[in-house]
Image (tube, rainbow, N blue to C red; front, side, top):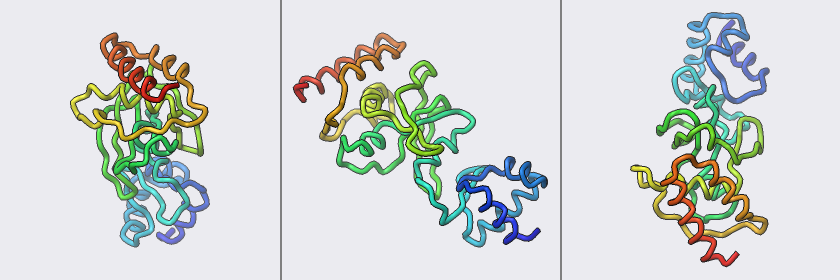
Length: 205
């Protein structure tokens, strides 16, 4: 099997995201051989390496946000914070990174498909999202707002100032405050509630 035949086998899988170990198992070849084939395709500009052992087919139909959970797998993540707020039309400023909440560790990952900013949360707080396509979970408008203020006290200072906010028509403050009940730290919960009450008072509903 040459590199072109290997690429043909990959496209038959109908997924843009490729894990070296999984491909080796599917094609019944060694991990070393799968890695060599993928590297040959990368040199031909046919695949891109996201990080060690994880690849994406170039020119394949996919949303860059889908790569977030592929990066953290097998641990889960969902798109939130500024990225989700922008997706829901709540802020106009386009985020320069793809923000994601995860039960994996906090880190920033620079890849050919985008820069990903992952933020760890307690598994009990990992809620408030929905699937919009395969491999892509995104926070609801309410949870995206709660998440923003949840991370405001962190040292990164990425969540201290929220751009001008536009609330969706069906935005539910009852849902917002219900998510706050999942915050285990009393201090953090108090800070988040205070900021949310300020926003609610400002918007008058």
